[in-house]
Length: 252
Image (cartoon, rainbow, N blue to C red; front, side, top):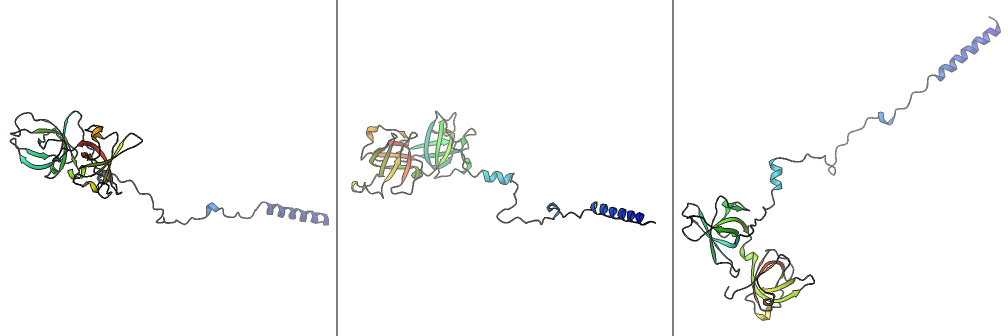
């Protein structure tokens, strides 16, 4: 082999080595997505979501609110405390209700419940001392053996002494919205104590307040019977909302 041919062969071999090196790149570094993630347990601040409860337990928790009060338009209404419960001649129960003094209602009312009577509470829980509001109508047929009335609908109220107030009007404040606040003291309060906040009670009136008396009767010293919501503020004097206002008959 001549020197020229030997040089040509060596040059060819060198070129092949260079080409081979260029066609074999270095291994690629692992991408971030190829790393293995370590599971993280949920912290107490971020608890895993819980499925919503259904069924009887969930339904019971939703039924904690009181039943709606019933109302019957154009029916006679009476509020009274159950004074006695007796059997009627038909084999059912007859209830004698007595009204709060000064409420303007008859002294007592005899009532019976029928299969058509509606109540906003379990009827079989009625007991002596309960304060009821009843919408009623005359009984058809012989039931009581005396004058009694059939209940159309009934509600159980707060105790009568908690929703009725008999007292003396010591001041009347007229407000910008046209309503008035009635400042009251108990009916046996002597005049020298009328200004004592410890004895006073302020009743707010509004569009829902029924006045069974004229504006001229609402003057200082007037005796009033007030039916109210039975809720009072803890202020001095306490304040509540009057639902009905009427003159208190002497002797009540």
